[in-house]
Amino acid sequence: MTTLGTALIVLAAGQGSRMLSGLPKVLHEVGAQPLLAHALGAGAALDPERVVVVTGHGAARVEAAVGAIAPGAVTVRQDRQLGTGHAVAQARPALADFGGDAVVLYGDTPFIAPQTLRRMAEARAAGNDVVVLGFEAREPGRYGRLITDGDRLDRIVEFKDATETERAVRLCNSGVVMARAATLFDLVAAVGNDNAAGEYYLTDIVQIANARGLRCGAVTCDEAETLGINTRAELAGAEAVFQARRRAEVMAAGVTLVAPDTVFLAADTVFGRDVVVEPNVVFGPGVRVAEGARIRAFSHLEGAQVGAGAVAGPYARLRPGTRLGAGARIGNFVETKNAALGDGVKVNHLSYVGDAEIGAGTNIGAGTITCNYDGVLKHRTVVGTEAFIGSNTMLVAPVSVGDRAMTASGSVITADVPAEALALARARQQNKPGLAVKLRARLLAIKAGLARKAE
Image 1: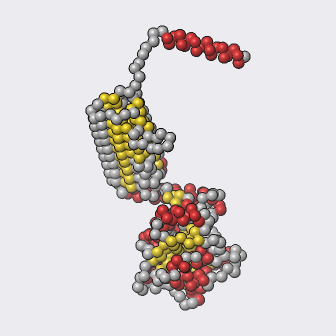
Image 2: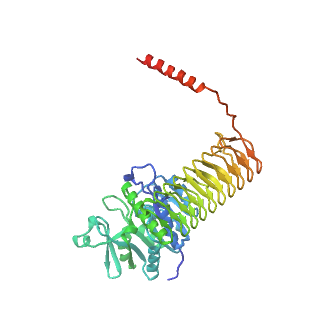
Image 3: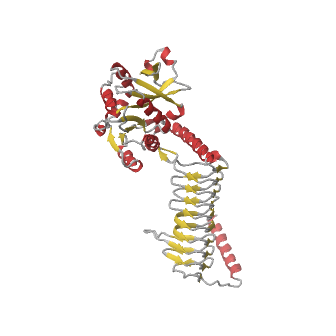
């Protein structure tokens, strides 16, 4: 069979009423990515020529997400949710001129493996007109059953319609289907809604296809791949499955997780070899950690790049736009945002560095703050190489400190500091002999007076 390319049809119209949420179900996240992104990522393994996402509930929000996740995708709306067959039919106009295969995926089913979809494509190439993905269920429950005759798929039987013999079958329907696009739409057009729900079920196409003399087959996968999300509990279960898989993947790739069950990864977290991650660390989206770096306990990273051999934490917060150079040190209770810290920079404790550029080899003392926001606009701080910023320095942006310059502890720096200069910006200390005793006595008298009034 000559291949003419593949199209994805991703069904993302459902409300997910059991989630009890104003957020469309497919936009709830696993691994810091929407469920929809996982489905689209799996389908990308087929190198699709077209991607069509069928939206419905919360369509505008889902369409905006599709634009961010898969800019080349087309969205179509299912204004009335009348079943999976009806949903697939909405994609027909978008694929009217498409001559290749189409695969139907679900935006709330995040774990279909790329290799599974490739095996479905192989089954199509082997002569099956319709290929359905099934799985051997440990507890088949009320899943639809795939009834086979040798290597042919004879029909899909819904649990409520199945005989006792058919209910004993453990091969269950995932809902994922692949066929030539034109064939798929012709079969869907023949599906009726003569059922209790009055809906058009995609599963009915198998019986229609066989009646027309077409060949139907089934490919199986692990049950865990077919996990669909309908409740918050199932979402939490999916997160646990995702985290277990990602932790195993990164450890197999040469990363040390000291306490794996306490580390939470995003779908796009990237590690170099010999990275060490201590307990209770959370990686949000967009984090890259280079070879030999160490992320210490109780840290949170998002949208950050950590250079080779750098150390962050414990209790560090690296916000989006943070870039740590090789060998940089970010210590306890330090927050960074939109800040480039050069090689070997040290910010060891109790500081905020935001909207800043810090040159290589510079030391930032405890309690330093880049005062970057004036209530309306953000402003930038630039510190040169091998500078020394004394403890409790306020750098009021926009401001720059030159190479090898220093600021005295407790300074409020409001003007640029030239290279190699020492900046002192604090009031002169004055000592008043005996005044502490007098002041304390006065305060105690005031306190006693207030107590008498309260009586």
